[in-house]
Image (cartoon, rainbow, N blue to C red):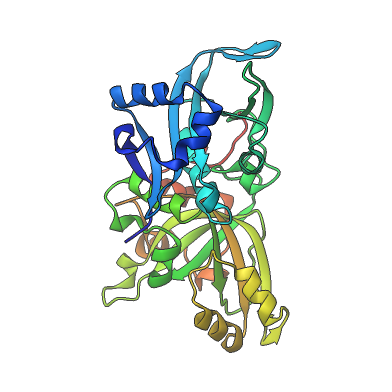
Length: 358
């Protein structure tokens, strides 16, 4: 069974679940608020396991002022993270960044300029997480909650996480990361397998939006940290690759470590395993085989900015016929204009993918 967030009615969530205790403690009116959401048939993003709810996200579109101590933010179209809660058991897992990923993907799709959340100062882990993704403290409300906000007109391009889900506009080149289908479909939700864009997002989020791939290029990579890359799914079945091998997604490189170069070890095996961590798709035996058998080996860490969706993945033939796929995938260098052309082929408006100045 593929792990994912479910978009569930409030009525399908048990308020007696111990998960909700801290929310009841922080907000005495929470049970009445929850009952109202049930009455209005509203929904939230929920991740459950055999022990109960592990993550909960409720989003609300607003167009009203935000009251602060000693001031006010004027009315504006905003997306409010009305409830954001992670169970203590998810610490060290990828659900935290995933739930923020859902909120930011939804914000990106909407015609709203800002997204914000209110958090009591004691929730230090959660505050650290949202700050990692570019939320900035803009004030305190009368409850004593800090208000953290992110604006499309003031995006922080200092690092790919703060900019997420957008791509830094200052890149000059891009490239491809080729991944065989069996690994791709675990690491990146392959949208042809699912019926809706929303379902793909929910699966992507549950599996983390930071990806680690172990690549074995034939030569030294041209890729650089901070550059965008297109994820190329290599079809290994019997059908022609020109129609079945496709570009599915786009990411930003957040880290790149050369492990082996021309059969020479640059990083020891134990350190290599630590770098691979729990975000890669390879088993221990596969990691071992890669390390000892490949002449060149690199660990590529990526942040998963987005995907094209069912029916919009771009075939090898389409890209090849456009003159945008000449040579071995790792070696192909795309200009900024080439990258934008491919984004458009997948039905995306580059102005809502790349963080152009407003």
